[in-house]
Length: 162
Image (tube, rainbow, N blue to C red; front, side, top):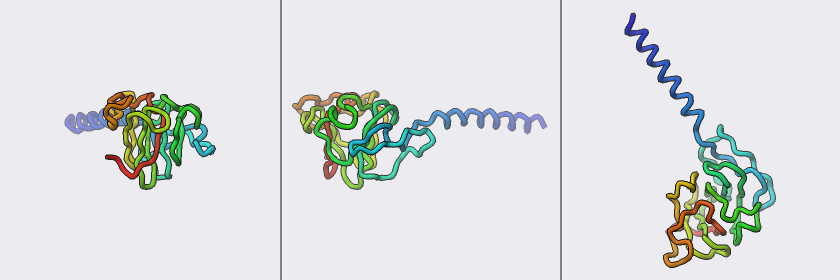
């Protein structure tokens, strides 16, 4: 009888530990709050949504890690993130490519200038502040090997990542 009570108590303790971990899951799936580059309103972020969203032909950028804060969505290229979609130039800390078939290059300078990083279709970088994602292409160009966090000025769709 004492063994059953001990096993039951241990199971309850383990079950109670699992709930906080699930409750702290990163938010995801939602489009950034605010206007999109096409002028439509995006839906708010929700922790209850799935971590991967269906392809919709857009690339998304958020001001905070894990798709947090305001952000933008583009269906086409952007030559300067400062002048469209609420001035996102050098303010993105989370990115997601929900394109149908293409990858996206993110550039250090406006007009697709300087070094760049490539995000494949269906991929996301949820926390650029960590510094893992860098401008890894364009050796000898401005921005090469710098982290992407708060340093993206423009983007364009490309056939694939190198």
